[in-house]
Image (cartoon, rainbow, N blue to C red; front, side, top):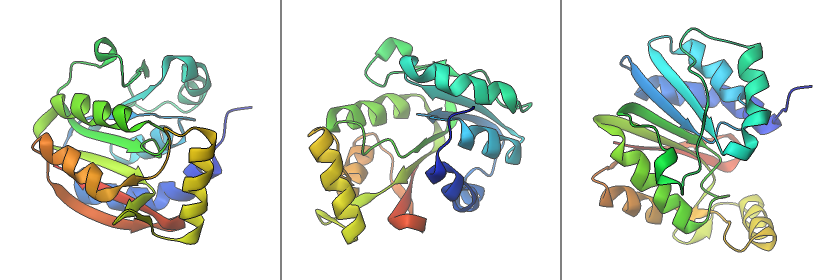
Length: 195
């Protein structure tokens, strides 16, 4: 039985619609935190001109690899083990696109900063960095359900929690990347696109 995420199943269609606006040219994509692999195997074939590299923390790779093997695509590259804190684990790049889904709120602030810094170093000059997930605006969750989710994350690990959209945008600005789009998504999530 392959690992399965209902959230990934629910958001893949809306995510595809936004990606169609930004993955407009042939190129290479690094997906950070591929999880169950549901996004990689479903989205990659819909962008046949984009060479798609999934990645996951090394100790989670065993959960990702079976799905990638069961649903191969011509443009789906082998998955790599990637811990955002391990500078040596990052692939060389450059990548035209970086995608990460539902990772920033389970990373610590330091890990988010490290992820942005390292990925932007490997992002082509005209590249796009796409971040999907729940965010706070003006220091506040956007809905009661997001507030409860934020509280549950912090109760589990004080380093986790929803990130402020403004703080994330400022971290990208430090890397010379501007906010190109902020899109509303189902279940009170957002897609932030930087370039």
